[in-house]
Length: 306
Figure (cartoon, rainbow, N blue to C red):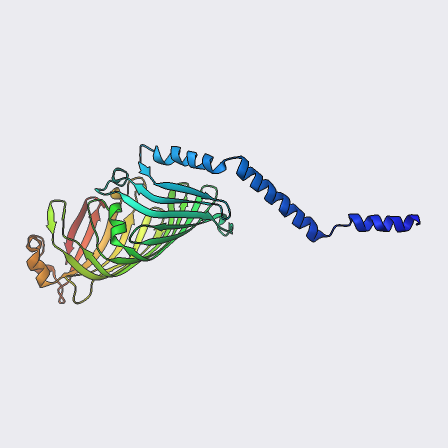
């Protein structure tokens, strides 16, 4: 056998194709991953970290029955995650039956790590897509059937009733709300009977609700429309204007709204205290009042306009 034929045989032996190289690399990485997973309890370290930062957070007590780490689609899931009433400044805690979050494909516009999160309680399911960059967070929230029982623990003293659809895009930069596009709709919106700031409210079955809001400029939320009720509702209202946001304490946000409101005769009869505030001389021909709403969210003020 001559030297050239020996060289050809050697080249055939050592000439491994690109596909084989890629396959061998993937197998090696997989073996390394499995070896790391089975020999180093990474999930226990993660769960221990969660235990320290979630359950032992005195400023906002939270707890959960169990947590799991997944590796195929890297993520976390919780069962019966409870946020205390103390944290929400409410009379009832918020209990989420299941929270699952996983890493999705990276985003290039905006630039950052993509996450997919599903939050469920016994009433509602909320889907959240988010992108997290350096100092910035983008969130897209969708809920096709969001029940009032899910929202009420977040509302403090005030309670709502009904089923809602929610679509929202939120930008957060340096822990500050920088942009917002919000749409909420309902066909069976109501206000349950309750005591609110010393007043006893009767049950108010309003019916349709449509809210659209967007950020007009920094710290200024524009209420594009807030429409309540129809011709058969005890209250009809069309509200527009701006809210100057206090991002450190939302209850101190300043209101600058104009509401066009009409009360049905039956509602005024059942809620007779309204007669102390209403001036029939300021009604228009269709029976609507125009009201300027100012002050803070926690302590709004009203002024009837002619």
